[in-house]
Image (cartoon, rainbow, N blue to C red):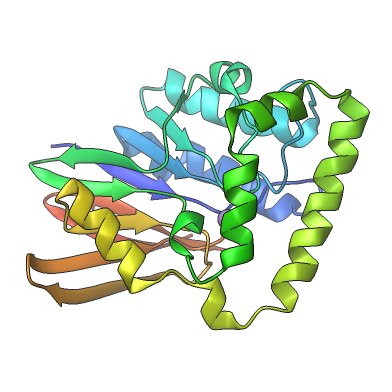
Length: 240
Ligand SMILES: [Mn+2]
């Protein structure tokens, strides 16, 4: 019987040492009992390119590599903060990069995994920015810039996002029911797991095609809430 774990929104960086320690503990603890650990984006607070290394990215890579060596596969999809994370860093960790969204068939059930930012369709300005930044040509041009310039850009993007979000009503920064149902319809699935909104919860609703569920993962602060698929059930659990 397989066990899958799902986490997101660790937002690791030098200013949040507690989140990194907690992640290292998680990788030595509960994650070792899983067949697969899925990281659903925003592992890092910012990412300026795989060639920009610091103590945080090194320790994170070590924690993930340790887990994969011990037999847990690690798969990650990008968040809005770390969408430039590339195959070189993934290789260093021994993890696989997945597209957003990704369909997983687990014990006959179809689960959709995504970061969640693409579902916040009321935030029109952000969706325009997202489409621009995820254009492979734009990403290649960004990564071709000198390292120092990329680091400064990442810093500015972080500040701009903070300022923009501070002025947006709460409702705009949540997913919309229409976007969620459209995604589940497209893959004929009844369960969606995502992060991004930092509003951990289990939502259950009735749809003409049957009961649907949406699990929202927690951000990593003093603790977090992660999801586990095991023994026929998908649950949201606290950690520690
Ligand atoms: Mn996010």
